[in-house]
Image (cartoon, rainbow, N blue to C red; front, side, top):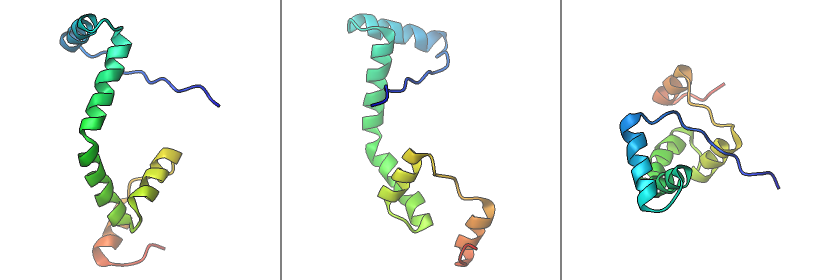
Length: 95
């Protein structure tokens, strides 16, 4: 089993960095622990919106949401290029 990957975020700016620090202290957490908690909470909050976005993109490609998610997680997803979008508009098949 491989070790979990860590992500890094850019500096939040003075205001948000201060707010994160205060939130962390109030909850007796480190800044990274609180940042993780806040990010997870926001991702959970956006579940329905993310599903609708996936549905639109999957429908454009004629695939299921599950297949689109799999492509994204495997690193195989690519946005449609202008030629592919034009073919969708005309109903043509991609070469």
